[in-house]
Image (tube, rainbow, N blue to C red; front, side):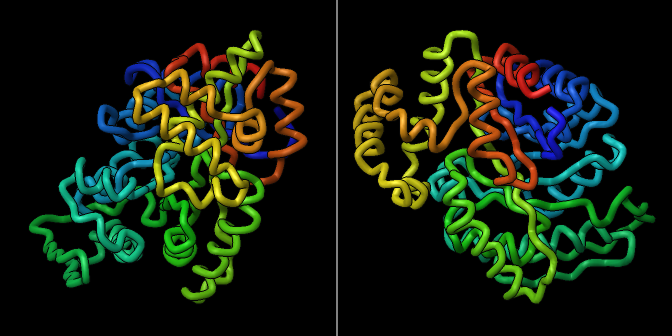
Length: 333
């Protein structure tokens, strides 16, 4: 799709080899970048290593790797290695996860995540310059003293881009203050981007004395298939799952989706996954996602989503695996 937009792919379904194949398909189709996800059963950094080995030119990113699941030293070392392995194609996308994920998955207290990110990202940049001398950091959240005992080689890039995920204004402001870009959530809408996300980014940038615009690499749930109803129902399942998280209520309130969200959560509590998808109204689905036949999706993208993001990250439903990836890649090629 040659329209001046930076079309990219988020791949999250299947095993590591499937993710590498998805990256290869995206590169062959001329996509700008391909991004790996992370969850309790998937490492973004290992996936990126496989994707780097399977490709030659396409840019790579993590959307996202868990910022607090690794120490700053490990994060910086992994970023350095991945950028070298890929030949300077890495964008390190970091996110905090929800408070419950921080507490239950990583054993943290979940307190003050935005302030912690504001300390972490500059610290990572210092660690990428470890070849310039020792680091002695005593901060609110991190204490780090590293005095190399041997020569440290300079990384391929000391200025590799670091993006931050955020949904609520405070976290988005933090991205505007310290990150090279924002990773936009799959529940974002054009209206939320215009009315909440971009003003918060600009506010964070002003607070930090920055004059450059901070770009958004935004997720866009994209389900495509010859069976329109099936493609839309698969997208509805993704929207419903994401809507179970209270942290994201701010997006739903903007569009008055409270009745749908309550029905989704009621079905979730009952273990009724079909009922969750049923609760996603057509208005809710078409506000948040792209779903339908290839022709319908392309028309809707042009009408509603073109130009919303600086980098549009098309995200096929993970449970469709490579089939879903191929459908998106073929439609947008």
